[in-house]
Image 1: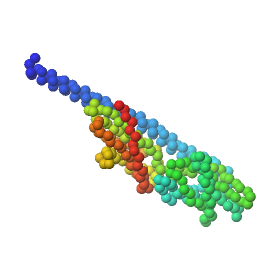
Image 2 (image 1 turned 90 degrees about the vertical axis):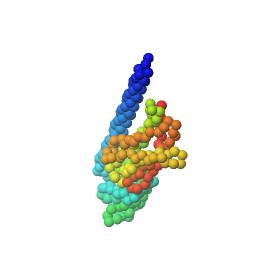
Image 3 (image 1 turned 180 degrees about the vertical axis):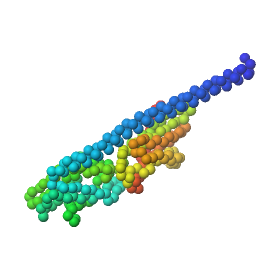
Length: 264
């Protein structure tokens, strides 16, 4: 076999290998996109169910209060941190006996009750309450008139006043034909209508040892229901860790290490 033919065979074999590698990479990327789309659809469904739950709660509150001595209940937020949210409760009653004592019971998910005394303020009874930003609460008005104690119907405290935006952060890794590790980070967020309680920035820090090698910013965009994804590639023998920093509209941030699901 002549040298020219031999070189031609080498070139053809190399070209075939390159085409095969490119096809593999394209197929892998397409598969990653399809997996991300499925996860997005599932989380979108959960987010929409949560939004419907808020509507149902509001309707239930109106029904429950229709035959109650509580005429109206209103909450306004006064301050927010990652540890607690302070709300001002304002209550009006359809009937009230002078000299009675009024309390607002706050009932958590474990049926634990905390009571706050309601003070009269220009015909409205008010109290400052503190709630955890990741819990769900109900309220109830308690009236003590001498030896008689009366409890109102329970009512839900709208969670969109005190729940910071909930999210799920997933990390995945695949080994590519190029012997590189392909990482993807997906941030799924629940719907949150209050901008102050919403995530304002989300970043992934690539850490090796004590050094931050790179910071990857997740594109939040305008849609809260679509997955926010960012990618990273590293050598196979590298051993980075990934730390997420989530910042909320009220200015505070939280950090957590991202757990990686390795698919090889």
